[in-house]
Length: 111
Length: 114
Image (cartoon, rainbow over all chains, first blue to last red):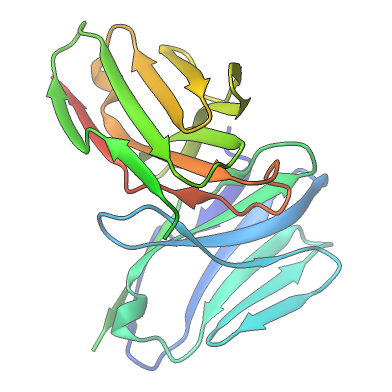
């Protein structure tokens, strides 16, 4: 069973728009929530990460929002650019355990 | 970019044949992982290693074995490939037990089993 559920599977956004990807989890032991970005033909790379002691983290145009009570977290890409077109994976980890990845979201930013 | 090299990058093989994928790192990281990536499933952990000769199973380990005789090399073997093992395989490394979640990935090995 998938412990981290990610949605949508794909999305198309116009240049300058906001891309929003959502993830939900069940395991309350998860205490680390990274997002990975993957370009075609490449391996994933860490984009941004958050721990549950904060509700939001921002790095440039990328923001993670975290709702501990709802067991949900999301990635917002502000002012989306064609270069942001990639597949994005959320993930979650409990201390001492391995990363569990969501199913991925393919983002296409149209110029 | 982290020094991770996967080989081969592409392979087509037939059902029932053995296949070995190699991951070589130049970062001297202690932890190494093998993932498979399939549409809709994200990345799923096959096996991982926490040191030379120290390995353990991930969530989808059936049909796979691994070996790590040197810090820099982590081999993934499919003893008898099946069509369900057609996938893109990624090697990853981390310096810590990945409590920080920061994994560095190779560029992948695309395996097709006919």
